Image (tube, rainbow, N blue to C red):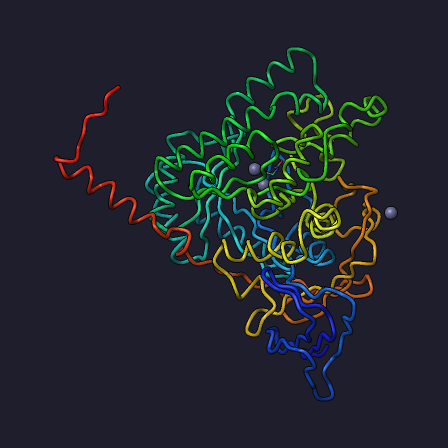
Length: 494
Ligand code: URP
Ligand code: ZN
Ligand code: ZN
Ligand code: ZN
C-alpha cells in the first residue's frame, strides 16, 4: 500500500471555502492542496473529477463497548469504527464511563477497549458521583490524559444520574480547568415517576418509554442546566437535543449571549415516533422491531425533527452527532415485558454523513461548506483539535472522503458494518455516496470494500480551551470588583 496519494481534480470543500484542486498526501499528512500538482511515479492517483473532496466526518458523540443497562453495546472500538469509516467518518469522541465512580479506573478500562481501534478517536468522560477524589481526578484527566470535556447525566436515576449540587460542583470544576461541561438533559426524577405511572396503567410496551419522558422534561432539564451554567458563568454543551422544547431554551440562551452549544443527533433530525403508534407494529410478534427505536431522550413526534433541522440550518444548533449506542435484537428484547429494561440506544456512526447530506443539503437547508462545518470542522474547533482535524489543508491529518453527489446510498442491516442485526434507518436511501475514505493517510474504504487493521487508530489528545473562555475571566473580575467596592453595592429593591 502506497503511503503517497494524489487525489486529483475534485472540488475540495472546507467549512469556509470550496474550489477545484488536487490534494497530495504523504505519510498520513496532507502535504499540498492546489490545482495541477505534479507527482512522480509510485504515487497512487485517485481521480475525484466531479466529486467533492471533504474532511472526514468527526462524530462528537458515541458509545462503543459501553456497559449499560445490564449489558454491553454490541459494537466495540473495531466494529463501530469500521462502520464509521465505511460511512465517511474518520474520527469520533467516545464517552468514558467511570468504574465505581473512579475516573482513572474508567480511563484505564477505555484505553484497553480502544486498543482495537482502526481510526482516530478521543474521549469525553462522564461524571457520576462527587467528592474530592473525583474533583482531583478531573484535573489529572485534563492536564495529563487529553480529556477536555465532561458529561453530566441529569437522567438515569439510580445509575448515572447526578444531583443539581453535583452539577454545580462539576460546572465550577470544568470552568477552573478550562474544560467543557456537557449535559444529558432530562429530569430523571420526573422520568422515574412517569415510568411508574405507565407500569401502573399497564403500559409495558415501548410506547411507555416515550410517554414516560415527554419533551417537557427535556425542556425543563435543558433550561435548568443552562441557568446553572449562567450562574457559574461557564460554557455548556447540550448533547442529543431531541425536542423543540430543548432547542428553544438553547436558542433563547444563545440570543442573550450565553455560550450554549446544542448537538442534534441524526435520529432526532430524521426519525419520528410514528412507528410506535402504527397498528401493524403493535402486535407482540413485532414489538422488538419497535424496541430498536428506544433511546433517551426518546425519538419525538413528527414536527420536532423538522424544527431541529431548521435550527441546524440557522446556526442555533451547531454540530451533528449520532449517540451511536447499539444493541442487537436479543439485547433489545430484554425489555419484552417491561420497557424500562430495553437497553437505550440507536445506531448512526455509519449513516450520519449520508443522512445529514440527504436531509440537509439535498433539501437546500445547508450548503456544501456548511455540511463540512456541521459534520467535521465545528467539532474539531470546539474540542480544540483544529486544524489538525476538520480541514483539508497542508499540515492537517490526511482524513479525507471522496463524495459522489450523483450516486445513491442505501441503508440496511443486511449490508451495514455494525455488528448489530438491526438498523433504525432500515430501508432508507437517498442521494450522495461516500465512495472513498482515507484515514491516517491510508485508503480504508474503496469500491464498497473495507481495508482496516485493528490497532491502527491513534488516540487524539484534546487540550483545554482558550477561545471558548474568552471574556469570561474579565466578566468574573468585573463582577467581583463590583462586590468589593462598597460604594457600588446597592441593595436591590424588591
Ligand atoms: O439512549 C441513549 N441515548 N443511550 C446512550 C446513553 C446516553 O444517554 O447518551
Ligand atoms: Zn445521554
Ligand atoms: Zn450518548
Ligand atoms: Zn434503496
